[in-house]
Image (cartoon, rainbow over all chains, first blue to last red):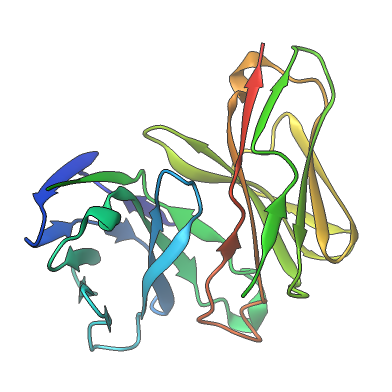
Amino acid sequence: AQTVTQSQPEMSVQEAETVTLSCTYDTSESDYYLFWYKQPPSRQMILVIRQEAYKQQNATENRFSVNFQKAAKSFSLKISDSQLGDAAMYFCAYRSRGAGGTSYGKLTFGQGTILTVHP
Amino acid sequence: DVKVTQSSRYLVKRTGEKVFLECVQDMDHENMFWYRQDPGLGLRLIYFSYDVKMKEKGDIPEGYSVSREKKERFSLILESASTNQTSMYLCASSLPPNRASNQPQHFGDGTRLSIL
C-alpha cells in the first residue's frame, strides 16, 4: 500500500515571500500521479497542481511549482510571492495510474500542512 | 465546472441514531468517494463506488455503509452512530482513470458531523 507523509504540521510565511511545503511518499509502482490540494477555511478542496510521474519536468501553475524527485520519492510545493489568500491547509496526494482502471482513481492523502500568511 | 453538493454543512446527531449523508454530482462521473478528515490524519477513504450499485471498501469502512442507486448520488450511512464518528466528511467524484487518467477528483464542501 502507498503512504504519503507531510512532516510539517504548520508553516508560516510573510506576504510576498516564498515558502516550500514538503511531501514524501512510499510506493513500489513506477507510474502514478501526485497532487497538491488546497483547503481554505471555506472547506472547498481545490486542486493546486498535479504531476505525472513519467514526466521529468516539474509542473508549474503560475506562482505554484513543484520539485519532483522520483528517486527520492519527494514532491514538494513551492509558493512564490505568497498572498494572504494562500492561507489554507495543503494536502499532498498520491494516485496510482491504474492499468485498466482497476485502481478506480483512489487518492492517498498526507496529513496536511496548515499554511499561515503574515501581512 | 463540476459541482459536488453535500446535503448538509453541519449535522448534529445522537449516539445510536442511523445517519445519512448525501452527495450529488452533476458531471456524470462514474467514480464517487467518501472520505473522513481528522486533524493530524489527513483524509482517509471510507468507501468508493465505480458504478451504480457497485461499491468497494476503502481504508476505514467499519461502522459505515454506502448506497448508490443512481449515478449522480452517493450516500454514506452510519448504521448506529457513535461518538468516535464525529468528524468532517468529504465526498468526491471523478472520471475513471482509464478514461481520464490525469484528471483530479472534485470535492464537495464537506459535512461536519457531531455525534453526542
